[in-house]
Image (cartoon, rainbow, N blue to C red; front, side, top):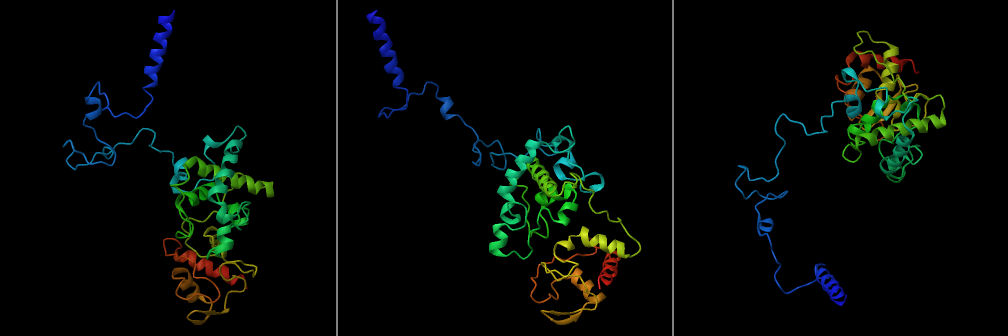
Amino acid sequence: MRSAVSAGLLAASLLSGCRGGDSELPPVHLIHNMDTQEKAKAYRKDTSGLFADGRSMRAPVEGTVAVGQLNDDDQYYKGFEEEGKETKAFPASIKGDDGAPKADLIARGGQRYRIYCAPCHGVNGDGDGTVNTAKGLLVAPPAMHSERVKELVNGKIFGAITYGVNNGNMGSYAAQIPVEDRWAIAAWVRDLQRQKDPNQSWEPGGIELQPNPTVASVEVGAAIYKAKACIGCHSIDGSRLVGPSFKGIWGRKEVTNKGAVTVDEAYVTESIRNPLAKVVETYPPAMPPYDDKNITDIQLQSIILYFKTLN
């Protein structure tokens, strides 16, 4: 019995010596090649001569896609439906049996929103985030329950997070926010809107624009005013936003950084194509240019017709 106890104590003492204590003796290598083998390490130069460019890390084989990275569902990964239009519907994978986004996903969206979006758009989506109130952004972030945002299709909200908006005024958050979390934020925004307005749809239809109008009209101009987000900076009721109100705009005298101008067809055209050419005083130079790919000449003429009705 005594010998068994002694053997146990000896084994325990030997095992305790394997706990990484300091030693003046060299380490014991039972299998030397496991410690000294030739191998490539990330971000290290290739010393084996195996690769001609001397790099250890290799690019994917041309024409191949890594497992799980095909991302062939354009609605889910890009926010597009057929023909490159922003999707109205949420992807089926994030919906519950009732057709609405899943409750846990909405909750996740609220959490992600408070991390990434609230600094500008406000904790409750009122557009009063600290960045805006403290710094006074040139283009104020919209309230999430504003009429303009309520009309946006879901793919547009997803796209704003993915690609950014307004020539980088809001940058892309694709690197920080995974795809599912972008949809979660969009779902939370819709839930926020529905809390304030129970009639708000989970999947609004957006603003339909004629794809290629051949005749200018007031109706086309009114739709462009909403669809191109003019409504976010220019009111039609006289209230002051980021830019001058469009109420009573036609024929109005404006004082710009290049002198006084009269709002006519030439000035409106210049203000859309090259908005920094003449900036109305007391307003920031914040409007991005719209070339004929963004707003066609027919659409521009429609905007002019619409402006004339606001006097």
